[in-house]
Image (cartoon, rainbow over all chains, first blue to last red; front, side, top):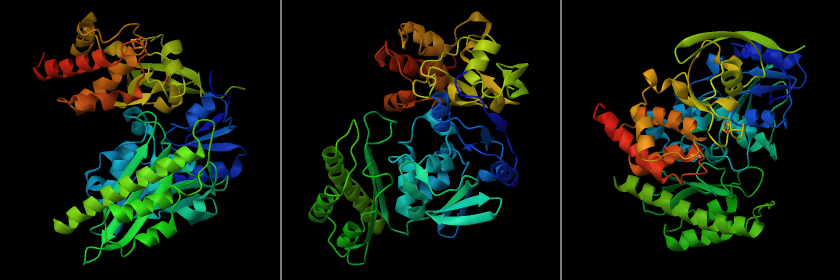
Length: 291
Length: 160
Ligand code: FES
Ligand code: FES
């Protein structure tokens, strides 16, 4: 047997799941299993109790509330990828999903599972950071909202308490006319990116940049929103000069290093990918403005 | 005491009931409990795709699922493809195009493509290559697999 022994629980409701988490020590929540199961097979994770959410139907949904997309934590990545509404109303998300693992892993993998695993380069984490998502945690004590900025507290570490589970996420949609882009560089298709960059751009009536948002993954434990760069783009004429200047600044951001990828290389990718993301987002914003 | 459960899983149309340890993976359930050794295990941590089967009609890594999660579900494995001992069009195309050498990766690839060709009956070469990113093959260099897939799609569209 690959995983170490555990006691298996398959609750049917969020309330039951919260009860289990409140009463059992060293319990782990199992979502799509595309990250936790490998960790258990390696015995890197050895929970005494496994609380499987796959039969909790109420955690799987896709809802539009005004200008926001609400996604249940157990909504499969595949369901988002193939939703025509997501493609139309939040094409950024679909573009990012195309980079998430492979068809077999997206069939099982969930939105919430990816957020809770919190790989520094995970695409869905990046998109949640760019859109400024709010996470909804549930526990026996009730529910609480966590802004994304307060969710990622360390390397693969969230601010969820041991007795809490992630129930869903609210993603504010980019306003009308915004151009989007998601680009990344990975060794192989489907791998976690070395660096990923997403961007949103909107123009004012005069065709200048009204607002820009950038999220860079792979530099730190969680995606970085470079506020100074975003601000510096406001009021600029969209084009190579402005994007080059912004990209150069992105290439100077602090970046981590590991056994495989140096700081310098990550910074190089941050510069190149920021430029590409801004260029693509701007072209799409232009299409929307003219179309 | 080992944590066990009684489960009933339908595999290739046949219901199987067993008492299993809850930590048993679906891959090991198929191979050790049901003796369906067509499903291969390469990495056992979700990287190679050799263990790909269909669960509830969609492809999944059998090494990343627990057998207990399949309680009441339909699982389809490579053993189902050659009904009556005759290779199906996808398998036949693999043979004709030398889409396999050692055959270790083949069961996972066939199951991935079974789902894929249902969704993309007339795929482009690029779509085929994207569909294959989740399956590692150390022998063929993929070229022959892509050719076999495109040809299989054509044969299946022709009603063969
Ligand atoms: S054995 Fe399951 S993916 Fe390799
Ligand atoms: S045929 Fe040998 S691994 Fe693919």
